[in-house]
Amino acid sequence: MELGGALAGRDGHGAPWGLPAPAVAAMSSVSTPGPLALVGSGEYLPQMAEIEAGLLAGRPPRYVQLATAAVPDGPGVVQHWHDLGRAQAERLGVEPVVLPVNNRADADDPALAAQVAGAGLVYLSGGHPGYLADTLRGTGVWAAIVAAWRDGAAVAGCSAGAMALTSSVPSLRNPDQAATVGLGLLPHLRVIPHFDAFAARMPGLASRFLLPHDPAVTVIGIDEDTALVGGPTHWVVQGRQSAWRLTMDGREQLPAGTSVTTATGAAGD
Image (cartoon, rainbow, N blue to C red; front, top):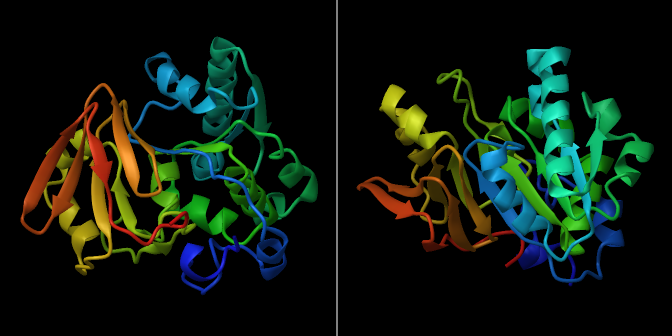
């Protein structure tokens, strides 16, 4: 299969998944994509180890980790995520591969992109979703991540990482800021992470993701320590709490164990 046409998610510039044309052409023959995970919070923590182990099951014991979304918070925060990621990999008995992608120059570094090859799981951790999307979109590292996923690797995004995998990323921190063009792997979704915490503190939050109304887009809230696993359109809720399907008419609770079908139009359809 080719990545264009019906299979392609599009970023805001018309390119499939934000990939350069040569990368798309080189990926015309692919195997079955791996699972996806959209995580509300808790990456690399013991309570989420079972979910991360499930994503790695049957795949190479190579755990590729990017803390790019945390770069605006400073090197100390980035190092914190690197340390947590390595500890989780040790807990799971797999190899940690920390990719220090701090800017677009790093994201276009062929040596860093090459380290994605052979991954069993690629994980985008939390922070600033707009910065993450702007840093990876259209780069060699992102092309390598998509290639690994198309070849069977699992890909997970937590909090900012989950938001950035969609095609439009509203700002949680600055309500008046325009949405950022996402990475477009899941163009039919919008994701609100930390939903239990944000819904309590910001009652108008959901409307920012629902408007303008688009029937082709499913808006999903994901509670902390909880994940949607599967994809691109068929998922199972895993973890401690619930996911929530949001519409203009209200919200539907999706407890752990619930199977969920989201709108069509995903990259893997």
